[in-house]
Image 1: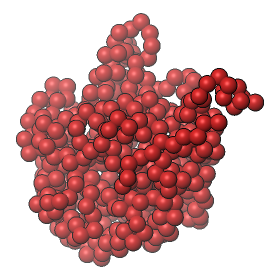
Image 2: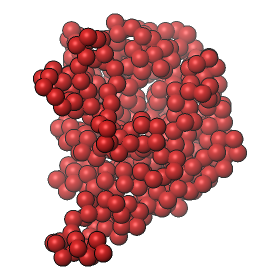
Image 3: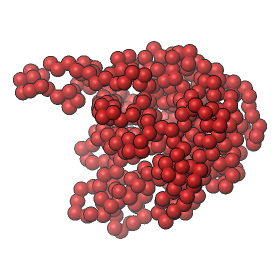
Image 4: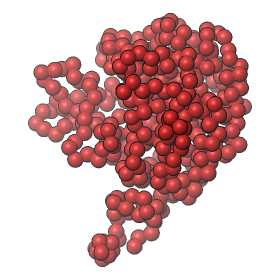
Length: 453
């Protein structure tokens, strides 16, 4: 029986990713808390509530779990509304709490990576128009300067904005994030403001901390055409990919925005990416509906034989992850995989999802692509935005009523990967035997026969 290992480079970062509103609990001064109080905004009327109760201190036990699982890094976010609950009014106690959390990570051997905006805005920012406000870049910069000045002795790696493409579309076109906008005409303004805010934050961080490494978290979604006689499907797949995946990374590379009829130059955004942060979950099929051209912007679907998560939200598509890594490599920057995971409360599909995606990750590393780290989404089940508590992404299960944590088998799987800095055939055999031959092909027919006995 074949014995093999896919080794990763020394000093590779292995961790999990979280965001403030999803884990802290009682984030009462932001637009998402307000959104949750409105009827029919969140599936089944769920609310974040105590979330994972990190603000009350349970971050410590969860960081213990991460450290005991041989993780050496953690990606988390700062909640703008805690730091600046009112315009230019700073909560120094909240900043000190974040120092405590970050120092707690460092004490446990976890390199902190900090996101400054992860989908939430202070309520007062939302009341001033949020990301439609032409002053938003200045407001965001002021907050960033305060946070970085206070935490730069602990944090060396910063993400300015998480998934600006997802945020712009979900909040201003699809209407599932606050403020619930459904007007495509606002999208160019939001895109412009997000890019300017990122650029302002990037330059502010480097003024305060010249040695810092600063980037964005880009959500890459794979799009493939539904097979058929219509050549339009291929055109739609390319259009969707360019519109969803390329706008922001191109803008922070060359300072230019290209979206539909939008052709703008933002010179201050040029070269404002020290690394490319990559979030990848799945790849979907798209097709054109000639009777309903507006459906071009609607979500696609998956093939009938797809390996689906329990709610059908994610298909296990490691080939799409390979496409994402190759796309990221094309920008010529170091790469951090900042989010990758699947919702699976019973932990049935997650082991093979994790194993197959880590193999693709190793292939990228083996091609000498500058992949520096991998952050699994997520450490503990948390509040999943408009989907509430219906999807469970954690290596540890969470009962939000009791705050009880329960380890899933995938936590042990990931722990061994982190410990060995490698994906081994033995590990796949134990946790995802159904894909062992796919990841570690038999040497020949004799071994294949032996395995089938």
